[in-house]
Amino acid sequence: MLITLEGLFPDPAVHQLVRRQARHNQRIYLVGGCIRDLLLGHSSRDFDFVVGGDAIQVARQIARELDAAFYILDDERNTGRVILQNSTGQRYYLDFARMRGFQIEQDLKSRDFTVNAMAIDLMEEGRILDPLNGSLDLRKKILRACSEHSFEQDAVRVLRAIRLSMQLEFQIEKQTIQRLRSAVGLLPEFSIERQRDEFFKMLDGRQIHTAIDLMDRLGVLEVLIPELNQTRGVQQTAPHTLPVWEHTLETLRWLEELYQLLVYGPEFINGENLLVGMASLALGRYRAELQTHFSTSIHAERSLRGLLFFTGLLHDIGKPLAQEVQDDGRIRFLNHDRYGAEMVEKIARRFALSNPEVERITLLVREHMRVHHLASTSNQVSRRSIYRYFRELGESGVDLCLLSLADTLATYGITIPPARWERELVICRQLLESWFEKRAETIAPPRLVSGDDLMNRFGLKPGPQLGRLLENVREAQAAGQIHTVDEAFNLVESLLSDYSMGEGTENHGTKDG
Image (cartoon, rainbow, N blue to C red; front, side, top):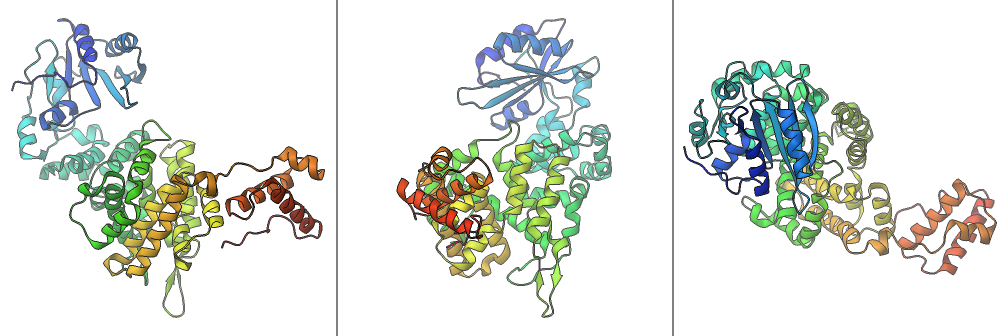
């Protein structure tokens, strides 16, 4: 099979530089998924090379010449990584590994799937080496393990098989499914970091709810997140139409559809119904802002989108602990958000997520009922409530709007009363409007007075009381109750008067409205 590598790499200089490192006594082969993607007409950000010599030395030399980041992935297996960035800040990865065996064919046969077991010799470009007929499986849309021992050698390939089958829309070959299922129990023997990375690639991909459902049916989810097992068979009463686990899957399905609609645009939706149409009319005006929001990240290797779907998977994990059956048969789950937050923090730390990621996911689960509560009482949210919402949630309040909408649709399904859905959309629209358009007015108004101002005016000392007074002023300002410095001083004077009478400042004006 003839092929060209022109235009494959993010920078033509990368291609030429790697070729210069290839010598007849140190062959370098481009291998794996980037060749698969090339044949499929897809772009790639991951480029794997096999080196017939010291791969770490080659990677280090290339990083030095490109002035790029470098680190050792696996010293024992002689594997190094070079990290590049394009003009938009998007990252690209060049991984260099020492050849397994004495010939490239031996290396390819030890890989995961036949569609990833193709190579191009950089000294003889234009021809693909394909000893396992991966190109044929590619045309047939089949995912087939390279050998009967593929999963035993590396059980993380179990997760990769599910991810690739969703990403590529390929069928997993029957015998490969059997071998995959047999290897699930080996997952705990492999690093949680590698499992996490494959899992988050899945959460950042396509058909997420289908992938999670497949993981569940194959027994993978029970090994990866055993806490979810307790949600199976937990019944719910109206307005819920599904048990807890089925509701969770449905939340992921709606979350994926709403995310595609609100972030990417209606052309990405398969079909359309009244519910998503209403969402588009209510919130579509913030599509550009949502794209910018979700293009940022709090960890270089994981996206906000992946964290959002991870939260969606875990948002009701506390319900089994909170379940109460009342005398009238109604089932309630009081404080399930608090129980869930405690569980999710432990799960996130077990996944070795960064502290900011753990905090964000935990916060979202703990507060995931907040939009529902706002929508249950009125179709308008007060400026004070908006201020408090974002004071607690910060930028993750944007994420919570999407999660709340998906959770609502998963609760009611197509039986949702139009007025209930419209009310939830109106609340989310007001929240997003405040965050994206009126932040200086309702979320972070410029300070009218400082701590020094209050200490000089009222003879106060630094401490918790001073902080509470400043926060009360800021909240009243965001609520539109005060606008000038004099009004701020008058409020503080009133608060201090209440405080001297024993009422304190903590409870002043705390009722939402």
